Picture 1 (cartoon, rainbow, N blue to C red):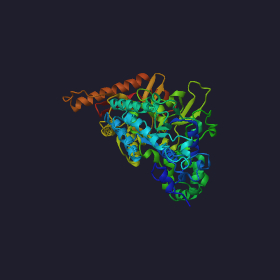
Picture 2 (tube, helix red, strand yellow; picture 1 turned 135 degrees about the vertical axis):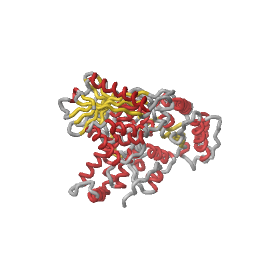
Picture 3 (cartoon, one colour; picture 1 turned 90 degrees about the vertical axis):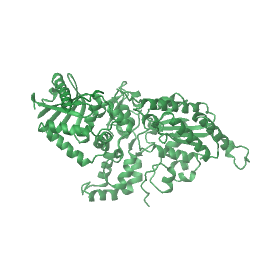
Picture 4 (spheres, rainbow, N blue to C red; picture 1 turned 45 degrees about the horizontal axis):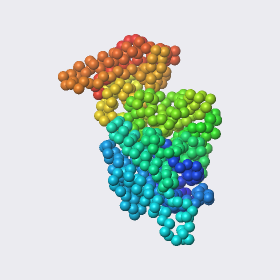
Length: 576
């Protein structure tokens, strides 16, 4: 009997009871519990972190029946029941200073009530200490007859603390430093309570999608172990290649027939062809940060497939961008807006050891964050290169094909793919015809869609917005391309070796600008476009394309205010 395709659920109990497909992670959990007391795990969204915590919660709740047939059921694990405090900071999202403390306090009191305990409401940090101690006392009531409850004498039933999405209160307010800093302090005060509870706590496990809150966590918790890049835990979330074959092999034939029937695969395709295509689309994630490997020896490492995409693929039997359909995390789009370099996914990308555990949000390449959020993955670890041992790459076809559309939608809102492709054709034709008015109309229309909340009156913001617009249309746009005399803002590659070089100059509209006419704004934008063209000439950005290019088109964009655009086009040093 086929198991059910997992629904959108984070409940281990529901997955097991409703006979859903489950990748057995209990051996990882067993090793984790035997080796560490306080652990941290960073994984991208929808990679199974919450389901992992739910399984650990069920394990410590003594629900052995749920683990029947899984690895841990035949191990020497005792299944002793422990009190569990499980908190998702994602539920505690807030953009109001002081509200996070109230939400944490409410959660702690609710957990206490479910255990029949009355918890103090003096403050959230005192409530944590009160809850932990009262839970410990409840589960270690030795007044009962020891003959009837012998295991209570063998080991204390200390408290287990599980925290999911620990970084949400910070990263969801990345553009509001007042709230983000206040929430950072709140989390610091919350985690600080752990230090005073060593005698009462059995195990702590914290997960998130970034390293944004590690400062608060590290400063307040003793002996925390980051398992995010440890090879022994590389497959703790997601589907490994072994998981794919053991859990989905009985669906290969049916899925292949459906794909052939819908002309997504050729009639002569085999199951081996199907498996290869699945790997091309959804495989490639590597979280092993220690084992030496490169592209020729990558079989040494554990590769992981995107679990969200895999279960949706076998449910719908269509190759598409399931994981990216929900769009990038909001904090990532805010960082991208400040870093036009972040679209430079072209190899080689290299990073030092500490880089992948950093959270760098301002005026520095966001590569570490793109790695942590799943848009990049490890492509090799070579310790001979002591300065930059890690190489990075786009993990698979899903990300490579669809991340531009995801970022386009993050800036400009929902968009139909066919409509985007059609707009791209209009743009390319306008460039090839040197139709500046048509290009101006396209850019002004797109900029008018930007929300005022997202808008940043900075030139690099417009670089990233214009690139998101062009990439979203399916056009290859490369940011900050180096030449002998500098870096161009954007280089586009059309078919037939046509290169388009774009330089962007912008100026925000003065606060008191009510006296400016449309003609005044156009003239200011034209002056900016002229400066952009002069820079292209002075820096000779086009020069390194002359040997390979059929055509080189130079395009200067002047943007005044929020959306007034003037475009100048030049080829062969002749303005049109």
